[in-house]
Image 1 (tube, rainbow over the protein chains, first blue to last red):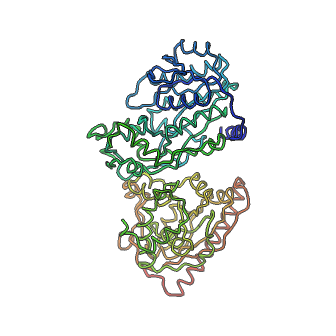
Image 2 (image 1 turned 60 degrees about the vertical axis):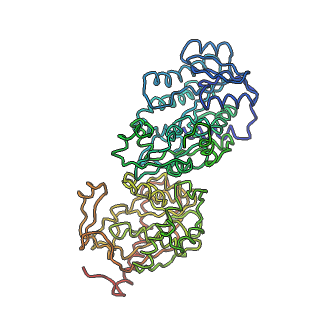
Image 3 (image 1 turned 180 degrees about the vertical axis):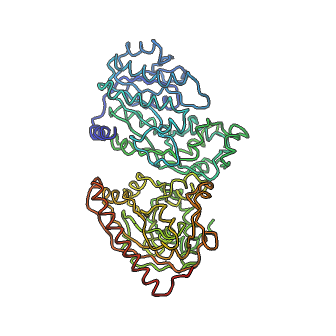
Length: 329
Length: 273
């Protein structure tokens, strides 16, 4: 995978010709990053067609929104009718507080439905927006993951298995449907004023539980930088699998301090007992490894291929999160 | 916290060429806040408790990638600690040597934090390669845990070397600075290693000394660094070729140990058991 990806990195260098305005379907457009991606694409002159089961009440007027399930026939009608040039697939369920069969179906079957539609309706470019937790966390895992590292999350964090499967399925489109320029992005935790997402959920309360004696590095990127990276992947017609990250990682204890919150170190045997009580967040059992050990990615291939650089450093990103309305810290 | 940091250490940390961010953390998680108290403690051992003599420090490059490769001596990580202290206190500007931590340490509460905040990442080839590519100074003990388990009678011998370090040095074009560490076996004379008890406590073994605990005596210690060795090749050569390179480095270290041990015996510093 990595050789192909490096080859593609040199083809689609940052000096590549700017992409002409195109018609883009964005699935999961009503999510926090989905909205930002849609706005960013629209401001660059692209036509955005959003698909989401959820509503987006204050969507900008020029944006066409279809309230649909991507696995349903009506979603394919959107492809048939509009003949989009590109798709950004963000309609994956990532919150882990409950595990349901529905989630598995959306994440894996939804991904399949999107690439099938791309293949049938001549879509030239498709971006899968995945997560860096693909790599999982373990005591003997390398600190900086390259794209060819195996998905250890399957064993260390079984609740993530459906997302890992969706990531691998989207990646397999590179050989199944080679006429589509497919890129798979593994983006680190996003953080910002929307105050939603896995990391924001973990930092929701004034008191943040940590495992006593462990302090992993955490890597996060500002919501807007994540949206910019996704838009760039599309505009540069990337092919291959790419890690996406922003500023250098910081220890979890430092992140908690930066956010003005209180670290509550809990001995590991008590950790599961205390979650969800005393104002501490609820976490699935597999998340324990992700609070003890780092998941940090090497995003240099993506930077080389797209010329991407983050606008918001770690302090600004945490400040944006902290100063957003509704913050209880 | 600053009460725990010696002014000399504070001043040296200022000159350390590590890219700390505004929170005092580098991209590998090395933290100034943790280096201060740790090096102040090392300073006590290095300057007060033991009598450490360092020879050939000029062979350690002031900057750029390099690999310190030497022998284990003493049942606990005393050798590593004193080599860290030598390159931090004797070099101008000071350097941070980064070891490869035993995998079990990352599972142990607090050891997990301190090994990574002091720059000693889990012993993985990926970590070693990445540190060298970042122009860091790597400290390698190719004997591994078998080396620290040496008993008193074997203190100035070498057990088998791993070959990973040689392949890595070749692949990354990293100079190897061989060193010998002498005296650890006298400071912590291991009579027996308790393997079963160690396993129960989650460590490879517990070394037992004549006074039971592996607490070192305040002996003299010597560190000899020698001229850099640059191994030619890609690192993908056949094992036989690599064995030759490993043997060359091992032979150099054995010579340094022998010469150092002879000087030590001449001074009458060998300790009767």
